[in-house]
Length: 220
Image 1 (cartoon, rainbow, N blue to C red):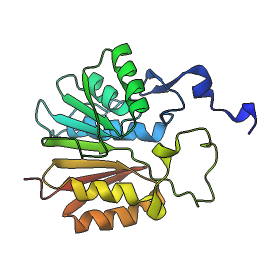
Image 2 (image 1 turned 90 degrees about the vertical axis):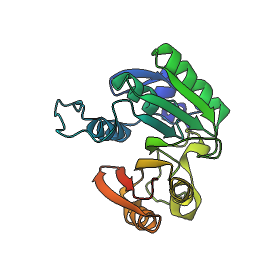
Image 3 (image 1 turned 120 degrees about the horizontal axis):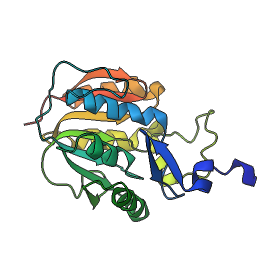
Image 4 (image 1 turned 45 degrees about the vertical axis):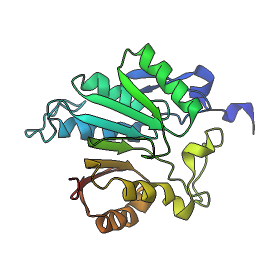
């Protein structure tokens, strides 16, 4: 692999996400624009303006929501949410100690009060959350369009069962743990994820780009 193919974000040591620069290294995925949509969805649930200035008329989250970011990586989702919704209690977890180190550095740099926990999905997580958001590994190694990701951490990219193994595992864990679940996945996977979620007593409320918004009907 030529040096020219090494991602610019890793060379620079940072990547912009939702208008802020986040530290990145080869221990974390490079934040991508499609993930910013998850932020917009949660802001809409909180009755806050989108980044484009559109205000949602109805707030469905409490004034001080508890939000969990699963598979936080660089921390870009959790940290952005805390800065956009300072009244919220933000928690974030990752199975990678190296990723959590980067996330905590970003939280310190951007002055965001986020509680970080090392956890394989919800294994070490207690309590109930108003929203769980997750950008988990969902890449199938056999996809013909996999390119440009060779330098990013395999742990954060790939999953078995057509890229769905880890997403399915989270779907099986969230019962009674949250009211809303937001998942990122490739659009080619959405139909299967929605079917699996339905079998776990969840209703798909919205598909926006790579993001799926579910209401968990068995939350309590």
